[in-house]
Length: 330
Image 1 (cartoon, rainbow, N blue to C red):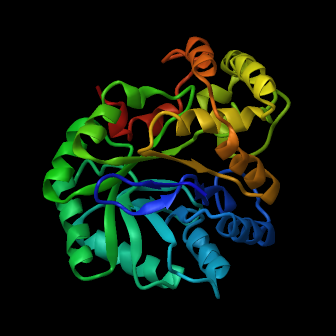
Image 2 (cartoon, rainbow, N blue to C red; image 1 turned 180 degrees about the horizontal axis):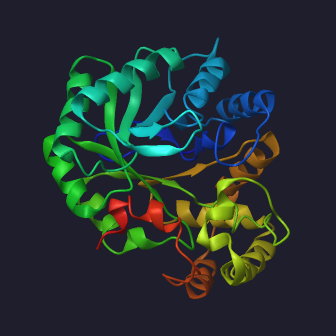
């Protein structure tokens, strides 16, 4: 497994990370035994970065990871945790809380649920509009001094917030959606991170399956994608049509569509670590195959022509969620 360093101050991690969210939330029922087997397979393949959120499955995801890591060495393993999202008993979202006292409270619960004595990268899931980012980062910095956290990350914030946070304590990485059809980071956020020495952990590299080569119009279910504009009506038709140029490149390389999409994100810089949200071992195996895909200049040019910025139809979240994305405010 190739390794990449998260920014100038962050940890060195496997070139692909495993996003564990779908094992507990948002994508419909998941098989617990298969989820654990997938985490084991990821670790055995050399993946070292596991990404979760304390609100994924209202704590279920952290408990799942704890079970998967039982008996495994904590050495050379990085756990990234997002916090701040508030849920009600029906699992609805009811706001953000990134006050310093809440930071320390959430962290305490995560340490217990995960069964660890420290978290490698701790980050607010979204910007809390009621709390200055300096206060939130300062509270995490206190937890670094106390030995409970190793590094500070951010998620879905814009350049101004990144600069303000980094002025309080070095930021290891920014977690943000980045894919062939979600390229907003290229406007200025990516250059800001590179200027400051901040790495990128890219989620949504397959746009929630939309550009995986596995999605079709007849897919249906009760997961949150059905509420997402890119998966609705004429938008879905337009976005699935975008997959065809990917198929052509994949066929030329003898790779799968998903492997080419992941490889494209990885090829955008050695400071970028794609997170793959595999819930099953077969999908994990496919994703890991992206590490062997070498995109030539001609392939990259063909993909750039097929996927110019703004090519996707529809926003990446519904309007209510988009309003919470500091990264989308220009």
